[in-house]
Length: 349
Image 1 (cartoon, rainbow, N blue to C red):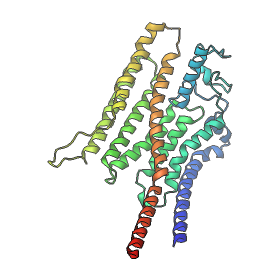
Image 2 (cartoon, helix red, strand yellow; image 1 turned 30 degrees about the vertical axis):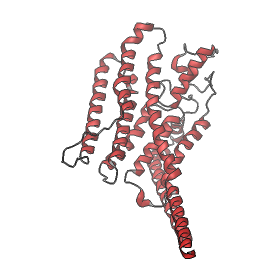
Image 3 (cartoon, rainbow, N blue to C red; image 1 turned 90 degrees about the horizontal axis):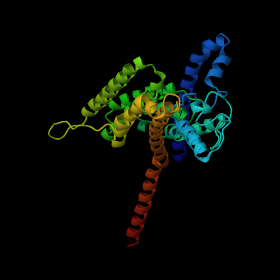
């Protein structure tokens, strides 16, 4: 019986992996097929894998490497380490737009290192989904949540990531939250946390795109759009939570979507950064000195928020891999041993 159980579990895992791989291969074939037909696959490949263009884009995407680059520049300045490209004087371009090794205080990063970091970061989530023996325990939102998490791992640790790539994370994550809202088996606490993380990540990722719209006449448009999205997404999340939360008297309880630190980050820290970028920097340094600092500040600030969400997600998946199933087996074994010992004691008496 044990052999048949293992065989059934292995078949379920293999089927699930084949389904995931089939979907990925199908999407890739449909996307790249026209380029193959017209002989342009090499051009597309060079754009998709820009290994000759440096670790970071000229405007750092809000990921782990933005903080790594900032730490390298800060250490080089503090330790007075000379840089061939200039350190603070070179601005953000000192780590982007070129394949040259530009880190001077910290170790240089290779494309292979970013690949293995992305793979290692994605492994707990992939394992938790692919090797779960009971498919019935997977929620409807499991697959889009997995896609969003793996995309976030690639965004955080990928090579030459563009800031706009955050859309590949928030789109499937939004689908997952919508499915959770319609799934009564998802607890209120779990839904509120997932919805809060989605709102936080979308607002942070969108704010990271603000420097792309740099004309003064564009400022009211981008700020208004982000404010409207923040209010609408929080309102929708609260409404979805309201539909479930009711006290015994029938009155609704105000659900808490964002945590305290998320609220402080979105409604205090980001506005302060925007005030500095738009007004304070020029008054402190003038128009020429440290011109890269506002862009770097936006990147590093948003990177801290994005990376914190990644840490929360990967910690949850690691806990799931470490304890899901194994705890149950240990408890079951412990109960079996205890019952057997009790039975033997009774028989002895």
